[in-house]
Length: 401
Length: 236
Image (cartoon, rainbow over all chains, first blue to last red; front, side, top):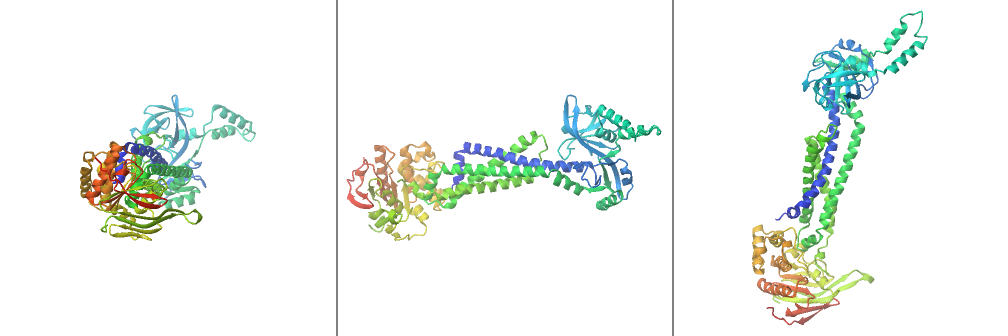
C-alpha cells in the first residue's frame, strides 16, 4: 500500500520542512526552558557538592547561609571540631556583589575560605588552571565563567586581589560564578564601611558618655576597635568522619551548640524547594504556555494542510478509501511535522540557544525523551481537529451539482 | 439485459420533510446494458446529480430498487452492508474535473484503487499500465498530475474509473473542461472501454457536442426520466 502521507510530504517537501523548522524553533525554546530549570537545580546542587561539606552549621532558626542571612561567632568552629564524629570544620562566608576588574565588573558570589589544605570544607575541589590560595590575604581563585584570567587584579571593596587559580562550574545557587578569597578578607569585606561612615560611627561613639568615660581609660578605643572588626562568619562547614551517622552528628551539634544544622539533603531541599521554587514555577508556566502555543500551531498547520486537501479527501472517500487510511494520512503528517520540529528544536536548543544563554542550560537526555514524547502526543492530539474535519467531508462533494 | 449492467426501478429521493420536503427523484426507471454508454441529460436542478449520488451509493434513496450486475443493492433500503467497498469494487467514477490526487504520480493515482481493494502493488500497477496502453498515456505513467494536459488528466481519470473493472461507471460531465476534439475523443474512449471491459457507462452531460454520439439518452426533468433513442453518431 502506498504511504499517502509520505507521498504528500515529498510532494511539498520544502513547505513541509520550512513549517517543521518554524515549529522546531518553538520546540527549541521549550527545550531550552526545561534546560534552564535543570540548570538552576544543577547550580544549587553544584554549590553544595563543591563545598565539600556534610553539614552546614548556621545561626539558630535561620535557613542560611545561602537562602537567608546567618551570623555566628567565628570561633564556634573550634568547639564543633572537637565533637565526636566531626572530621573537619571550617568557617565560611558568602556574599554576592559586583567584583570589579579594570573597567568592567562581574556579578559574583564572594566566598571566604579558611586557610588550610585541599579538601578543607569550602575550598574549591579542583582547579582548571593556576593554584589554590596560599597566602592569608589578597589572593583569589575565580570561576572561569567570570571571564577573569590568572594574574588579573580584582577589586573587592577597597582591596585588590590577584587571581591565582581558576575553577569551572563553581557557581552560587543563582548561577553567579564564585570568587574565593581568604576568610579574613571576606569577613572584612562583608561589613566594610566607607571612610565617612567609619568617621561618623567613631564620632557618635565618642559622643556617647557611656563609652567615653574619662575615668575609664581605653574603653572608647576598645569599643571602637570592636565596632571595626567582624568576628562573625555565615556558617561552619563540617565534614563527618567516615562511619559516623550524619544525622546523629548534626543532632549533637544542635543540642550542644544551640545552633541550626542542616544535612546535605536538607540543604538541597532549601535550595531547590525554597530558593528556586518561584523561578521553577515561572519556568513551569512558560513551559505550559509554550506547549499550548505549540499545540495550537501544530493544530492550525495540520488543519490548514487538511483543508487544502478537502477535495482529494472527498475523492478518496468516494472511491472507497477506508476512514483509517485518511486518519493515517493526517496523523502521520502531524507526527512527521512533530519529528522534524523536534529534531530542529533539539539541534537549535543544543547548538544555538544553550551556548548563548548567560546562565547554565542543562539539556538532559531524559528531558529530551520526555520532550519527544510530549511533542508526539501534542501532534497527535492536535491532529484530532483535522481528523474530525476530514471525517465530516461528504464523498458526495466530489460529484458536482 | 442478461442480468449484468445496471437497472433502476421507481427510484425516489426526497430531501427534507414536511412542508420543506423536496422530491428530487420521483420514480426514475433506467437500464444500461454491459458495454453500453448512455447519456443522462437534463437541465440544472432536474435531479441528475441526485440520481448519480444514489446510484453511486453516496446518498440513500427514499424508495425504489437498484440492481447492479445480478445483485440487488437497494430495495427500499440498502441491501449491501459495506457501501464503501461497493463504491470501491463495483462502481467506477469519472468526475467533471479529473480530481487526480496531486501528490501521487499517474500510475499510483490509478493503482491506488486496486491497492485499496487489497490487490498486491505489482498487480495493481500492472493493471494501471495495461489501461494506460489502451488509453495512450503509457508514456506519462511516471508524471505527476500537474505535468499532464487536460486531456491526459481526463484519460488518467478514466483509467482510474476502470481499473477495478466495475460493472458500472458513472461519469459526471466528463467532457465539461475539454474542447470539442478532446471531448469527442473522451467519448470514443468511453465507448471503446465499455465494449472492451463489458462495462455499463452512464454519462451525465450538458455538452451539446457529445449528445449526438449516444445511441440511447435518458432525459431527466423534475425527477423523472424519459428514454429517447439517440443519434448514435460515429466518432472519427
